[in-house]
Length: 285
Image (spheres, rainbow, N blue to C red):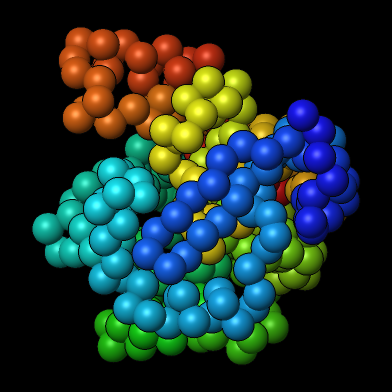
């Protein structure tokens, strides 16, 4: 049933939506709605900037949300040393999927990682041979910025972003956290060198998601604000003058604890080949 959303969709501007699910974690609660116009989902109402700042400055990289809200989300695990090789493999697979191998990374000039967290992508880049002096990062979490700086990286709060031009700007699972995605795209465009590239990775909201209902892994309270449809994400960038030059997909995001092999491997491959899980990857110029 169509309802008037409390907040206008910040992707397309529509007020018409359909209630999807309510998620609760501790004292936090978020309702998710499907936008009738762009086919994306968002939290309704949106959290305030104060709520977001408090959330990301409360030991974000030590959070383990796998105790009921989402069995597949643990920042504590993802940012741990033991998981680093897995994260590095994810970066390598994603980059190779769209033909952006190590040589192109090294020759990209200055690189800005928007939402750099503790500098994990920089760790990957340095291992691939990218000079440290070419790396810049911004984030909202003071504790994460501190960790990245302790590693020797030039990382700043989002409001302190360096007004220079970059040959490559990356957003690894970041745009879904951003309160005002259109403003972000415009800011990124102003920071991009002529001929530069933007890499965007984000969960996909589509038919597979709707079929999974509340089991979809990315309905996170406070943290995820938007879950983009393919149409909406492309339009968001193309309306600001970008062109999508390559795209790829992860699998179906089906966890092994729920779907065992050989069914999981077959399901993931099918979802990837049909781009049912789309983002997870775009590269734009």
